Amino acid sequence: MEFLLDFGLFIVVAISVLVYLAWLIPKGTSLPPGPPNWPIVGSLFYLSKSLHRSMEELAKKYGPIMYLRLGYLNYIVISNAEMAFTVLKIHDADFAFRPLSIIGKYVGFEYSNIIFSPYGDKWRLLRKICATELLTRAKLKTFEPTHQEEVACMFATVAPALAEGKPTNMRTRLFDTSMNMMTRLLFGKRYFGLKISNKKNDEFKDTILKQLAIIGILNIGDFVPLLRPFDLQGIIRQSKQLRLKVDQIFDEMIQDRLKQNGLNDSKDFLGAMLSLPKTHGFGDRLGDNTIKAVLNGVMQAGTDTIAITTEWALAELLRHPQFAKKAREELDDVVGLERVVNESDIPQLKYLLAIVKETFRLHPPVPLLLPRENIKGCEVGGYHIPPKTRLYVNAWAIHRDPSIYENPLEFNPERFVGSNVDLKGKDFELLPFGSGRRVCPGFPFGFIAVQLELARFLHGFTLSLPKGENLQDMDMTEVFSITAPKAISLHVVATARLSLHLYEAPQFTICGN
Ligand code: HEM
Image (cartoon, rainbow, N blue to C red; front, side, top):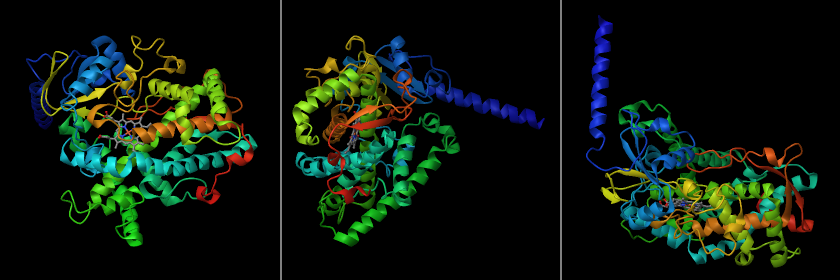
């Protein structure tokens, strides 16, 4: 009897949930086409872990603007350049919001992090701080020697393996280099590399990596709010733990800086933020939570994107030595063999530029850009888009569109030789940095970093695979977790092309070797 009562109650609750969800599904509107929509889960079963690939497949059937329902959330997915222009240019202001999320709440310091911040005054202020204190042309120019020093440090760490003919794990080297570049830009200090690695620094790196992993997970609690309290994937628990760690790491940095320098040191970004005048209604200075959120957000956004792209470029060039050969010829022509490549050489390296564009095309590090949201309903491409619809722009699919790119699955930098298509977000067939109001503000930094690292490697080394591995079997698949790194990290054996003294870091101690 008791069992029957429980069962009856279960049926009543289940029916109520279904009716509630059916009521939430927009009616009487012309939504874009999309896959079937099942009760509670919506179209969830049509998606795989490789969200970008499954959305690309679905778009082949349902078209360049596609509607998906996941739980109680509406999504549209854009999969060609024309529709990307429509949403990111014509409807830029409509879709300038970011959806609220658990990770944005906790590790985004209640959405104070630029990446997660809703469109509005706070976001405008955060972008302004970045534009005036972090990523100005003048600051990046001053940062040039530091940038070069870091790449030289990477060389110095590869050098011992080079002498012994041992394979080097490029993922680790590139990631540590990106981390150091970002930490030097933000805090004027390097944290990663041989001998300077310690438990605390490793925890810092681990915290950034864990945040990146968790940002990419589709949270069932976001789709079905009734399930949120159960935290089935442990996302709330992990986000809270990460927030504690992030708080601890950045609190310590802020306190150390305040003790050392007072508020007037503005050499690096932390110093600049601590010294910002009493404007913007933030009291004596910017609140600690805002500072921590900005620092954490820039670390999240700037670190693995650069490393992922350089790793993909090196992997493709190993598989296509004819393009590597051409790039080296250009480098030898422009730079010679008596010195290393510097940032000032980059504008002359046109073939290298074509390789970098082709890498961003075939392996966009953020394949779906970052999700956006509209607050008010709008019409896009003749369809009604309800308010609070989440937007994914599938750069991955756009970059592989056969109507734009011949043999789109082939890595072929020649397609960009002499091409004016750029990456700043005005050419909608190539969008690795996004476009519109929420375009990546780190573009100048990220773009030059990838070019410089790649140029140094091509110029400095001949690369081959470790013994026993062959190019035909090389795994070129990616894993998706907001960013899309190579699934298996690249290990290479490097052989020197230049005199050995050029592989020593200029100030050896700074590398912590
Ligand atoms: C290869 C390097 C990089 C790539 C491919 C990349 C890509 C992206 C993409 C696709 C977005 C989302 C744009 C959109 O929603 O339309 C983004 C946002 C962002 N990126 Fe980057 N990024 C890179 C490097 C950097 C660097 C070095 C920094 C900082 C120094 C940075 C800071 C940011 C920030 C703060 C946002 C959020 C902007 C906002 O929401 O207003 N990124 N990035």
